[in-house]
Structure formats: structure tokens, C-alpha cells
Image 1 (cartoon, rainbow, N blue to C red):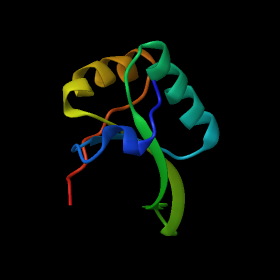
Image 2 (image 1 turned 30 degrees about the vertical axis):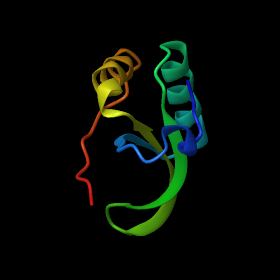
Image 3 (image 1 turned 90 degrees about the vertical axis):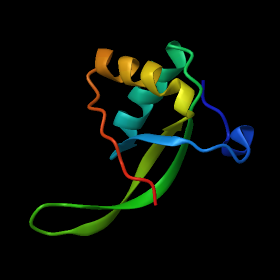
Length: 88
């Protein structure tokens, strides 16, 4: 279930996915919501492109650490590739 970022207060969250377009973001939102995974999503900038690097805007999906394994399973079932990012 999608939650606003303030719902999670100051709790540490894990980035699970960066959707690069609206269709992809909506598909992941639907999968997580149907599976009752609590998550937050916000837009942010990322670098993309192989030959011509550019700054783009994507939908960043976050879950609490205790929901990480469930989110991975949901993403796998719906053909999303999970990638781990380092925290800053």
C-alpha cells in the first residue's frame, strides 16, 4: 500500500527500484499494492544513457527493511529486476 513519506517518520528505508517512466511506475505500484506491501514513492533525478549521459527524472520506490524480502518476491513475480543501491 502506498504511503506518504511522513507515514514512515524518520525510519530508515531501502531503495528497491527506480522506474524510468510512468507506465513502469504504475505497474510496480499496482503489484506492491495488490501484495499489501507498504512503500513510499517519490520523484528524483538519476543519470542515464550509455553514449549520451543525461540527468533524468524517475520514480524512486522505497520500503522498510522488514518488508524488503516481500518486496523482492513481488518484484520477481512481476518481472521487475531488483537492484541494490548503496546508501549515501
